[in-house]
Amino acid sequence: MVRVRNIRYLLAAGLTLDDVRVFLPCLDGDVAAAPPSEKGLRVALERLAVLNERIAAQTEARDRLEAALRQATGGRIRPVA
Image (tube, rainbow, N blue to C red; front, side, top):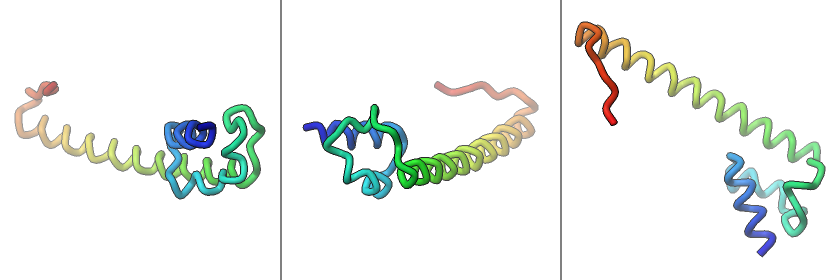
């Protein structure tokens, strides 16, 4: 049960299943409280960089779409819930 909880913790933090493989040796312990390994830190920092790139790309796409909508409607756009 501890292993499953640790995997869920790592996935919820934003890591992928491939990323979690690096943590296999310590999944039966307290992953959240244990000091991170150099390899674990590297994997997490790489994943953070990927997520930041994706967020930036999505933000740019949203901004382009919003600008196009503002131009097409004379600035009369409103969010749709």
